[in-house]
Structures are given as structure tokens and as C-alpha cells.
Image (cartoon, rainbow, N blue to C red; front, side, top):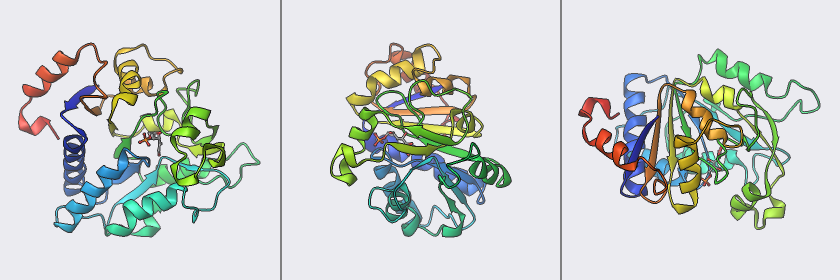
Length: 260
Ligand code: F6R
């Protein structure tokens, strides 16, 4: 894992946006795996700015979002569809027909999630996956004890996760208890991954993910198996990393071309 500690969230999103922009310049029809949540708000704002200034074109790109709540319509203010449309899709030139979110249709069968897996496969797989991380180390909505080989399926959210996501719903009890999420196995098949985290509340999860053992109790630790992950954190989120000085020295010694 490449750990990149930046001064503040603004620097983190500038770097993540440069990686994103470069990917689309090299590969205009890239398949993008996207995330929602507070961490992503400044990233999407920066991507929209890049689009308005002519550096980012998404006409030929395809999007697969990591997850969606179960049991609320996509028009609900708390849905991830609304989040993605409001912060990103409706502000750039992406073709809405190429924006996909998992759906819990078929939830009564064991095959829920299969259609999403097939759609990702048909699109050629995910070229660049953007991730946030939960305080409990979840990625997507793969809560602790998720199988590290899991595929897209329905998960029960922890109370902590529902509390963390309460804002658009008014109270945590109104946050749906279930979500459909790409599995950890699905995420690990992405060709490149960037994970963003800001603030002290994420420091323990980041330290466990990067420097702890691989365990289903910290789902993000499975990323240690992936050959191309950039972990981009601000000073606060990186504050509990033991090898901070090494990561900083490594970054300082990198030639420009290796940074994106
Ligand atoms: C959202 C997602 C989650 C979030 C994580 C962090 O699509 O899959 O894993 O990335 O819960 O959320 P924030 O950024 O709100 O702290």
C-alpha cells in the first residue's frame, strides 16, 4: 500500500482529483467505481471544478457506485443515487445511462447482487475505484466480519454506521438497517484503488488497515492484498500510523511521474 499523508483534506482531494483526471485523459472510456459519504463531498466538488475548467471529460466513462440502501426509493434525500446525482452526475457531462448503483431487486433469492456483478464484468471491470473508510474499518458497506472474498450482496449495517450516516435522515433510527454493497472480493478486482480519509475519527481504522494484520474484523485490511492502492490521508487521519516518517520520506523521494 502506498500511504500518502497530506497537510489537510484540501490537499488530499487535489491529489485524488489529479489521479482521477489523468486516468480519464489516458482512458476516456474508463470504468469508475465511486463512493458516497462526507469524505467524497470535497472530492466531487474538485472534480466538478476540473470539469468546468475543461480538464475532466466524462462523456465516455461508466460509473458503478459501491453501495445503496435497501428499502428506500432512489428519490429519497438519503439515497446514494440522490447523493451521487446532486454532488457529481448532474454537474458533469457523464451519460446518466452509464451510471449504475446496485439494486436489491430479487432480494428474496440468493442471486441478489449477481446482476450488478455481471454488469461490472460486461463493462470490462473497474479501472479506478475510489473508497472512503468507516470508523470500524468498513469499505463499501462491508462491516466487520464480512467475508474477505464477498461479492455484491445485502448487509446489515451496524448501529455506529447508521449513526454516522444519520444526517440526511434526521435520526439514526430512520437510516435503513440494510444496504446492498459490492463485496470485498468485488472491490479487490478493481485495477487501481484510491482510499481517502480525513480527521481524527478515522485514525484508528487507518492504522489498523495499513499496519495491522489482515482480518475480517477490519474489512479494509484486505486491501493489503491489492497491488495498486493509494491511501491518501490528512495529518489527523494518519496520526496513529507507526511508520509515518517512512511514508513521508518515500513520498518526498518519488519522481513526479510516479505520483499520479
Ligand atoms: C459510501 C461507502 C462507505 C463510506 C464510509 C465513510 O458509499 O461505501 O464505505 O465511504 O462509511 O463515510 P464518510 O465519508 O461519510 O465518513
